[in-house]
Length: 357
Image (cartoon, rainbow, N blue to C red):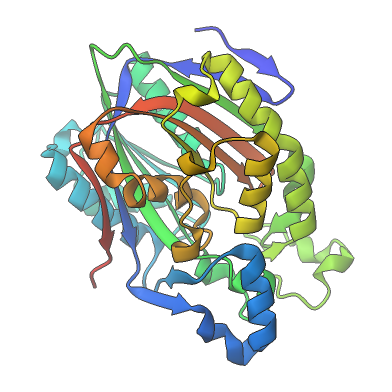
């Protein structure tokens, strides 16, 4: 199908596939804002929380990884769908908190799930924009005939990479992982629309400076002075400016490309970056607030997992009952962004589960 390059990103379209089910897995450990009072003081906590809107977040224990959460989500999803493991053609792990530098986490997850040697398994290193990218890749594999059933394991355990002394990140991020099942649908007449884009000039504004093969903390960036290079650094002002510049035209371009108007959508799903940012985006784009679910107050910014987490938390019952037209907008680290328009449901499985040790 034709591909169109635009200033806001690449326009892409897929057909012949559908979302069959989604399961989110959350850590049991809930962290309230009281946890941070001793570190930052009650007044600072109150000030930060007013901006970010996070009241609670879930954090994993030290021995638990993103892949562990994905494993339990995948087991529940496969059982609920009654899918045989030999029927899975691809497993894609999308995260910025993998188990190891190597091998790919998808490979070890493939082994734990008992998938077939013919099942493709690979990682994608993306964060905030991950879900639209993952959906496009999985549905494109189905459209081309490379796969009939695909599992997208999308999530992050950001608590492992934040500094307890950095108030801009410590109170913002939560942990979560999701697995989405995609499958070929012979009679599907609903196309899915995507716009995917990148502006790598902003890549140093949200970064873990010390990496596997390069150390940005040696780049003489004054913003990093006194910061732990092994922990996540975020320039909130730059991230906000980027979001306000990119996301509103992304939304209007998505509507134009898909041929739908705002009133044609049941729900708009935004990456749960922070409450202040979401309120500004909603005000600027004039989208109906009553069709924009927000759960950052309960789970924090869960990075790549935030949109599918909204599906299981805020839309679970609706997606079980009927087909729903969704628009998704994800943006952040990279800079990278993506949007999706597609119809989802009714789903046999759409659940949120707690991790079991």
